[in-house]
Length: 505
Image (cartoon, rainbow, N blue to C red; front, side, top):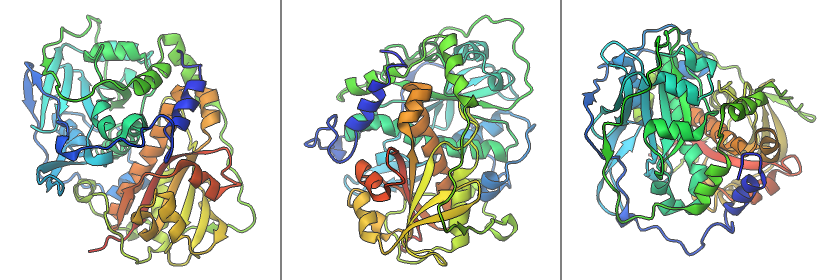
C-alpha cells in the first residue's frame, strides 16, 4: 500500500457511505452501557497542574473568526492552559439519559460524545514550563510529561522541516484513539477522526488568534517518526495533525533528541482495539520519507478557480463586528452544545451571512491556501430568503438559488431521517471533489478533504453560538445528498453536514 494507490481511498469512502456501505455491518448495535473509558491512564511521569485565567481574554468569538489579530503575543504556561482547556477540556458535566452516569462534556463537538481525540504538547523552555513532550489530561486538567528534553528538533524532522514549525516555541500534536469511536460507528469512525479533530481545531485556531499567537495546521509529516516520538508504535492511536503555536523562537543549538519515555499507559481491556479497514486506510495514506512529505506539499501551488453563479445571485449582508454580539470566545465555548431540538423560528439573513463568512475564511495549512470545498444549503426559514436550495460563492459572498420550495421533508431525509434536519432553519452541506483531491494529493488528500470541511464546520459552530443561536452536526445519506443537488453537485462527495437554527427552549 502507498499514498499513490488512490483506489484504496475511493473504496474506503464508498464503502462507508450511509445507508448501505459495504464496509458497514447493518446489524451492528452499540451498547451504551459498555461505553469505553474516555481518558488515557498513564503510570509515571511528572504532572503539571494547569491554571486557567479567571477572566476571558477579551476577544469575542466573532472577532476571532472574522478579524484575526496580529501575532507576537508571549506564549507561556497560562496561554497554553487556556488553549488546551478550551480546545479539549471539560466545560461542564451532564447526566447521560440512557445509563444515568455523569458525562464530562468537552469544549468541542464530538460524534457520539466518545471523545477519541487526544492532545500532546511538544514544547521548548517556556515561562512556567520546562522543555519536554507532554500529554494533556482533561480529566485532571494537567500536563503529564512523557519525555524530558526539547522535542522540537525531532518534531521538525518528522515534519520535513516545515517552515511554520521551525520558529514555534511550542506545538500541539493531535491524535485519534480511533477504537473509542469505532465501537459505535464501525469503519465510518475514520471519517469521524477528522470530523472531530476538525471541530476541535476550529477552537484551537480561534484561541490562538485570541492570544495573538501564530498558528496553522500541518498535515504533512512522516507518520512513523511522529508515532515514534509519541511512543505510539504498535498502538491503536493515530497521529493526525500538528499545530505550531507562536513564532520567533530559537531552535536548540544541539539536537540531542528527546529523552526516554517516562510513562507507561495502563492496558485497555474488554473492547475490540483492531479495525483492519481503518488501519488499512490510514496506512495507505501515510508518508514514509521527507521526499514524500515535500511532494505532498507541492499541491499548494495548484490554482483554485471560483465557479461563477448562473443567473441570479443574492448578495449576503457584509458582517459588521460593531453590530454583532461581543460574547468572549471562552464564554461561547462554554455555552456551546449540540442542539437537540430546533424551534421553527427563522434566522435573520445577516446571521446566516456571519456563519457563511466564518465557514469560508482561509485556513492556514501546509497543503492548501484557499477553500477547496463547496458549500450547498437547504434554507427552510431565513428572513429575506425564499425557502429552497442554494450554492454559496465565497469570493463574491453571494447565494445562487438552485430551486425554490419547501424542502423540510427532504432535509430530514437527507439527514438520515433525523427530525433535526427538517426542523433546522438551514442545513449546510460541505461538498468536495474527492476524486480530484485524491489525484492531486494521493490518499493523504482524503485526510485533507475531511479535516478541512470539519474545521470550517467547527467555525460555523462558534459563529452560531457566538450569535446566540444553535447548531448541530448531523450524519447524512451520502449519495442522496449529491442526487438532491445535482446536476451541479454531480461528481462531488459530502464531507460534513451542520444544521443551524434557534434552539427550542
